[in-house]
Image (cartoon, rainbow, N blue to C red):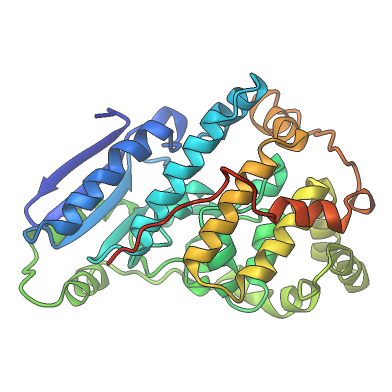
Amino acid sequence: MSDDVLLETRGAVGLVTLNRPKALNALSLEMCRALHPRLDSWAAEPSVKAVVIRGAGGRAFCAGGDVRAVAASVARSDPSLSREFFLAEYALNHRIHHFPKPFIALVDGICMGGGLGLSVHGAFRAVTEKLLLAMPETAIGIFPDVGGGWFLPRFPGEAGTYLGLTGARCDAADALWLGCATHRVDSSRLEDVVGALVAADWSGPGREVAARVLQGFHQDAGASGLAARAEVIDRCFQGDRVEDILAALEREGTAWAEETRATLLRMSPTSLRVTLRQLRIGRGQDYDATARMEYRLSQALTQRPDFQEGIRAVLVDKDQKPRWSPATLAEVSDAEVEACFAPRPGDELELPTLG
């Protein structure tokens, strides 16, 4: 078993601790492979009434999937890690999405990308005052995956479109308004939350028991800045073409709109086009269909040059000066975007039926 994820049973609670604090608890292939079978066994074990997942170190819940390792593998002309990692990660997200018992994420600090995959699909997401939540994938040449095509379109209005394209960051108040979080808990009380869940009387319906315990720790998160901008976000991000969104922001003419437009123009043009298409398709399909679509996208986009360049610019050299290819939206054809979504031999995600 990987020391990077600690798995234990405390009373009626299965407890998961992501244990890579120096890497901000980034999710690796080995962690996925250790966690998934334990979730299966907890789902089948009558004495386990709920599962809690948290991150070690106090800085991050999970900063995302270990995309640097995937990029390094692709750079060696070895696509196997990309296939294996995304298969394992998406299967794990699917297990959480369909988990038959209360799945409770205690989200303290940074939660990005794959961290949302480990939390948003569960029944309860308790966030703290230290939350920093984002889906920043368009900055590294990929797309908001781990079910982003399913949950982002289900956020209020066009908030999910805005977050998925720009990678904008959210706090606890924003997460509650989005529905991404269910409770706000003080970071200093997270261990008390675990203790209360372990000590709870689980003789009643599990969701009611978990909700009652979490509500006992819930604190007001204040006003959401994202909610305050909902009207302008809806107005600017309703378009089905990235160019229409950029034009709407230009017409808006405010400092926020100009800053947001500049942010979009720094992102991978291919990623922007693919992401907007992904989110529009995701509005009308269920989670499992979205997961299958995203697996095809993961294999298409990790093989493109923008993924290597985005990882270099953001995570390796950190110069924040990516050289995208193609360099402009106009150079990314509709046919090129549609090709990313097309089924290809070996790029299909098989998902079991779960209860």
